[in-house]
Image 1 (tube, one colour):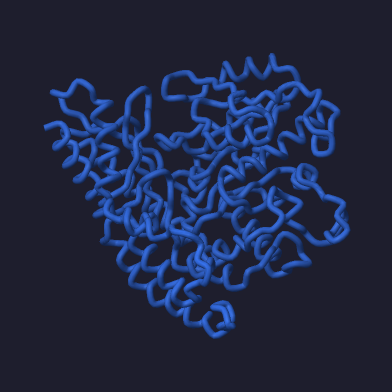
Image 2: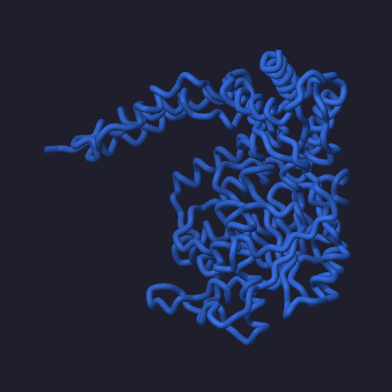
Length: 473
């Protein structure tokens, strides 16, 4: 009895289905709603019991395409302003398909010299793009959270070594708490990384001089002087609510004075380095001990893509280490083996979409994209300031615009904006979520998708005002 998997000729037919569906789907992103509230039944078709006998390659793929192209949240499109999520440039999307086609594991050189070299090349290109020294070590990760985990693993090794402990082999037992200091802008991904490292999610001490979260450098200076042993400072390049930046250069001065480790979380804000207009926001980045960013945000490559850079390349290898497994390369191997520089052993060739987009568009193309988004964010800010029923809550510095709906006859603006944000997501024509900034419930759309135009941000303002008027009328 033959099984569906026995049809070796089905691969081409299945890929033809995907190709045929891809172009009209991608073309539709510029006009279709981001989400459709009436797709619950369609999503439900994903379920049911595991079939005893499968549908076969072509029918199974066709079913997934039919459901997915209709029921997915169309976050690759130009009006997905929620979180900070880019799309996929044409070259990046094709590079990601190549990654699936070739199915490489660049965890070690022996498994894929091609995949390993591609990762080495793109890490060099990214350092060049961001203005980081070529001497920094680096590794590609799945996200900003995993990049924070990777970089802070190196920081943890550095810190423990100063207490006379090899934390890689001996663990944390007997060590004091690791002091971690930041501003009020510290992101949950940093806290999650500390949680996974066994250092405690809530151990970060935040030194803020106002309710926005801006760093109190004098308080940080005092805390570093009083710390029992070396500390880790987390500088934030791009607050998720407003796009504001910690003063990296001044924090680097404090780190050098007190012998602390400076880590920079630049999940999206590191891309300020790409444009001369915003490069000053990351002044001092080359003085950091570790820096991270995210590719599936402003680089516009598909999920999953992050990168971690560390000043001392040896620390990544010491933090993640060789494992003395006889079938794996050991210490001293002449080739780079990325499985020993980060948390992943088996690793997708996530360098390929990055290579494809950087090769296709170069420095100039990515600078132009960033600057277009800067212009769009400024345009959105002006529209908000000109609207009588909208209120800009923070200056527009980068790609995030923090504002809220307001009416003089409404007393509870927080409740109104919370309802507006929920209704906006249900409506689906545009996507933007709420946050709490300085105690106020607000919207914080982020503009990082390569497809986004002035018409898209103008539509966002129009729909926010439409829903706000309906809810408060």
